[in-house]
Length: 132
Length: 132
DNA sequence: CCTTGACCTGGAGCGCACTCCAAGGTCCAT
DNA sequence: ATGGACCTTGGAGTGCGCTCCAGGTCAAGG
Image 1 (cartoon, each protein chain N blue to C red):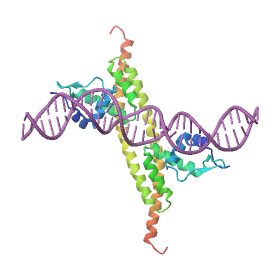
Image 2 (tube, rainbow over the protein chains, first blue to last red; image 1 turned 180 degrees about the horizontal axis):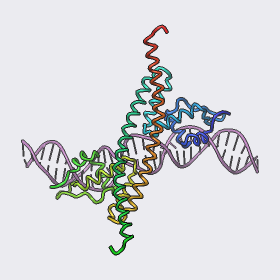
Image 3 (cartoon, chains in turn orange, brown, blue, purple; image 1 turned 90 degrees about the vertical axis):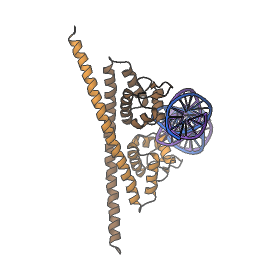
Image 4 (cartoon, chains in turn orange, blue, brown, red; image 1 turned 60 degrees about the vertical axis):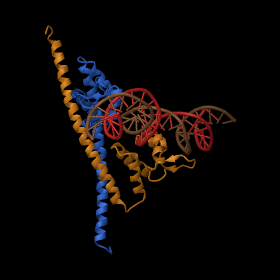
């Protein structure tokens, strides 16, 4: 019987079995995952590669609803590459902006860390030379 | 009457008035925001600067509960700089890791964008030279 | 034969971070 | 002094993305 069980797919993708079922229910898969004779899901390569893409989109902050829109486009087959491109490029811009924002905020936090580091070192110095 | 009204503070901080009240209720402020004679909040400089720090922590993904822990430390006054440092440094590491992860995923998405760009351009070429 | 355990489904529940609302008081320009 | 914008509180509601659960099927091992 080819393909991975849902538990194996969970390990492989780093998601939980619950999340895999949820993604499928929610229309994020390109097609329903195949089933064994007894109705158990079998994840084949194509499924796993698609889940990897979904994971990348999610990990970069794309909402489920937009992942579904993308899945819808891919599912419809060739001919809408321009639309897919627009969606991905839009997402790219969003991510770049977020990255820049986070980096700026992190810079400010780093400066704060610098201040506390100085304060703590000064305290240590004082302790090292007691009697003021 | 000194300080900004909640509406003005909202504009200044980029948060909503509701969120400002929520932050205060949830223990994220260093002390309760001052009030006018009639009980309306007045945000002074110190409040606004603290909210900016909170915003930076939130924007870099720190959960409310950790911001509150940090606020608790600062509220307790001098002497726990080492603890604050530990909290901020821990957060810094988390953020750096996230940034790296997002950048890696974005790289993969960029490669996908490249593929679609090629596909779309090829389609355009075909249209430009009809009758294959 | 019986238990164990992996899987199934539909649906409820949860944690997070807000966001909104009702009912009422305040401010101020005309 | 009146209308309308703004503020107060406590508490309920929302959207997101899972996460968990009950009750059931099925196959394999002891």
